[in-house]
Every structure is written in C-alpha cells, then in structure tokens.
Amino acid sequence: MNWQYPKLIGPFFVVSQGNSGQSKHSFTPFVCAQVAMAQNSFGSGAHPSFPCGHVPLTILGHFSHAIPQTPIFTVPPFKDIHTPEYKMAFWRERPQAVVSTRHNLYRGSPYRNLRRGLSGGLTVMRRYKDIPLWKNVSPKQWTDWKWQVRNRITDVETLAQVINLTNEEENEIRNSMKYLRMAITPYYATLMDPDDPTDPVRRQAVPTSNEIHVTKDEMEDSVGETVDSPHEGLTHRYPDRVLLLITDQCSMYCRHCCRRRIVGQTDHQRSWEEIKEGIDYVRNTPEIRDVLLSGGDALLVSDEFLEKVIREIRKIKHVQIVRIGTRTPVVLPYRITPGLVKMLRKYHPIWLNTHFNHPNEITPASKRAVEMLVDAGIPVGNQTVLLKGVNDCPTIMKKLCQDLTWIRCRPYYLYQCDIAKGLEHFRTSIAKGIELIEAMRGHTSGFAVPQFIIDAPTGGGKIPVGPQYLISMSDKRVILRNYEGGIFQFPEVEGDRTSVCPPSCKMCKDYPLLESKEGVAAVLAGKRMCLIPEGTLREKRRKSYRKDSGHVPKCDDF
Ligand code: SF4
Image (cartoon, rainbow, N blue to C red; front, side, top):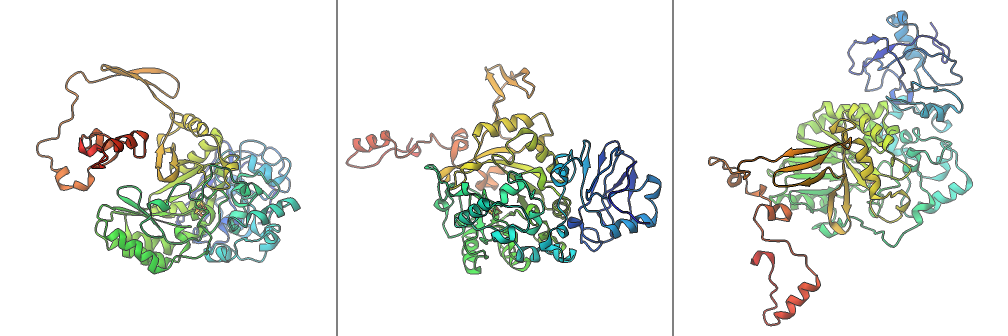
C-alpha cells in the first residue's frame, strides 16, 4: 500500500487522540475537515510523545477539490483505516502538515494559504527537512532541546537560509542586534512565514530597525524591578512573594522583551553563589510563601541545576509554592521532557507560567508540552503580552484564549506592553486591551478570559483594568450591565449587612501573616486610618509648620 500525498480526494474521517501510548484509536466520521500531523513535530515513531507510534489525527468530512503541491497527509477511505497496513503506511509516509479546513485551504501560495485557511485545531508548520539548512537533521536531533539551543539562529546569514530577507531587512537586523541579541530556535523558525515580514510569529522573533527608536517615555527598567531588589537577581515587591532570576539566557530573545536590559547579556545561568544569596534572603523573610523562578528563561538551565535550586528552596518551611516562568512550551517545547517533569513533580506544589501570544504558536509539540506538565500535576498558566500587529484583534485574542484552554493552559494575564526601550512599535493603546476583554467576557468561557494588567512603571506593580460592569448603586440595590448591554438590578440585603467573625474562629490569630497590613485593604479593614502620599507640596508645608520637631504627622499617628 502506498500513501502518496497529495493523492486521495474523497471522504475523510477522524482518527483521534492516540497520544498516550495506548493501543487505542477511535475512528469517527466528522462533518468538517480537520486534520493533523507535522513531521517536524512528531517526527518518527520514536518521538517521546508517541512511543507506540500512534497518531493523533482528527479528521474530516469531504474534500471536494484537488490539493496541489500541499504537504498534506491523505487519509484512506474509512473502511481501510483499521487495517495494520494503514497504520504502518501512516508512519512510513510520515504525514507532514497539520491541516484544518472548513474553507478553501489550498488555493494559491501553499504555506500562507494553508495558514489562513485554518479554522481551528493545531497550527501548520513548515517541514524542517524542506529547509536545506536542516535537511540532514534527524528527528531525534530535532526533538532534542539541547540540539535546538545549540543550533539557535543567531546571525543574519543563517536566518536568510530559513526565511526570505531583503537587503534592507538584513541591515535592520544587524543594527538592532546591537541592542538585544538575536536567537531563534529552529523549531520556532518553522512557525514563521518565510515570505511575510508581518507574520505574527516572525515579528516576535526577527529584529527590526523599530527597536532602535527610543521615545522619551521609555525606560531601561520599565517596571522598576531593581528598586525592589535587596540582592542582584532578586525582586521583592509584593508582600508574600519574590522573583528570583536564575539565568539571563532564553532559548529565543523575544523582540518585545521588557527585561531586555538584562536578558542575553551573558547567555548563561547565574552562579550558584548569587542564587544562594537570594535563597538566603527568602529563608530570612518569613512572610515569603511564593518564589517565582525566572530569568531569562528558568528552564534554560539543566535539570540538575534547576533541581539544586528548587531543592534548596523547598528546605525553607514557610515557602508554600515554587513557580516557574518559562517560554519554552512556546518556543522550545522539546524542553519539556519526561525527565524534567519527573524531577519537578518531586517538589510539588510547582506552578508554571508560559507566554503564548498568538494562536499560530499552538502546535502539536506545544500542546504536548503543556499536557505533559498538566498531567504531572503542574498547573500551567499563560501570560500574553498585547502586541500591535501580533494579537491586537478581538478575533485573534479570542482564538488564542480558547485554544489555550483546549490545550489545558489557563489564560492568566493579558499584559499591556511595557514602556521598555525600543518597544513603541509593539505598544497599543490601553483602550485596545479593554476592548479585547469586552469582546471575550461573557462571549466565551470565564476561565478563557485573562485579566488585563498594566505593570505600572517605576515599581507600581500589576494593576488590573477592564471594562466597567457596575453602573450605579444605592443603599437598596446595585445596577449592573452584562456583556450584551442589558441593565439589571441586584437588590442589596435588607437586614444587617455587617459581616461578623464566628466566635469560634481563630484564623486571624493562627495566621497573623495573612492580615493585610498595607494598602487600601488595610484601610478597609480599619487597620490604618489613611494612606497619604509622600513628596507632596502639602507635606512640605506641614514640615515647615513644625520646624522644631520636623515631625510630619503620618497616617499611623491618627
Ligand atoms: S522568553 Fe521572556 S525573558 Fe526571554 S526574551 Fe522572551 S520575553 Fe524576554
């Protein structure tokens, strides 16, 4: 039996979800067309995701027109799918593209139209062996994260072998690399449209001259991490958690990175001594219950080094959770190996946040990476950055968030792009973020809607903003509007509204650290009289009235 593609035109069916290594496939006829398979994601039957050689392939209705020169895997008539010959032929031929079609997929330029035709499911990737630079790379090498890191694209000459660049683009890249180095994993490079400089994946990876342009408002340390840093590489901003940077290396240097002042400086992990200083700070600060390991990319260090860091943190009794910040599920999904996952699950609770920005980044390989983590009990959240020309569109954002929930990654934050140097071309108005949330809240599952966040410059921290749903209120009722624009009342309780602690409750006594001692919450709780800003003219006047003592009354004095 010889499955040549593209040949078969006719009925297509579903072969689904054999990704666990079990000998179980179900074959379901389906209405609209949706297919699967990228050789450069799944490789041969030896791929760790599919040790049995089974295939997750979702199918299809009926293609009614020929598919010229398209790397599509063709599926035999339904009755033949169950045969052993079919299964063997499937692997022998190694289907090459993940295809999903409800529309006319294959008209015009194969790659671009393939992308545009996607209506759901997984993303089309270029077949890496079709790129001369990697034609001799074996699937085993390709899916080895260390090979991917060693073979990152770091210069224009190599990049030009993967995507088409004009002379002008080449010069732009060389110039902007002086400000932030370039590194693109071969895997991520196969997601870029080779012909389209506006491709959303390509825009995140390939430098442009826009990065050289710095506006008056832009800052080196746009969110003020250094002002809250008791030690190099450690930021303690919020009451109960810290950020610990363990490397400045990333597998890819994102062109929108707000930590560009430090990432890629050495392209190496930090020394154990430096990290140990940060861990000692955590040990000596009992209110810290959450340690976020980041970088750079916290998963760019070896499993052994990461385990050494986590093990040391886990010795601290007051640390409840360890969080990992990494973009590897997106740009280097092969980093999520069975060995890594096995190591991490020894140190639960571990949480992980990643950074998908566009639905085109959701591929069989990234899906598999997220699923391995979640299956190991590691909740995976996503922090998207709102980027002009990448995801500043309600349809794209909704598709991204829905696809994330489909791969079991919780959309967590949508960040307003920071005012870091050289990022003006990526920034949208804040109104755009509010518009995106408006387009999602109520229109799709609540857990598919991230929180829109502005990370306030100079260390103000994360501030949530969003559409307003509270229209008015009286002491009798609150007036609200819903996502459709309907206006509703919610009656207030008529009796006593005061919350009273149950007499037997000892929670506050047992957990004094949980009490909010600052901020508006502390004023609300009656722990503080007021919050008065410093450095105001009024404060200066007050000082002048008390020349003798110099003591200006603060909130705590009242
Ligand atoms: S992975 Fe994160 S830290 Fe690294 S370059 Fe991208 S955005 Fe910056």
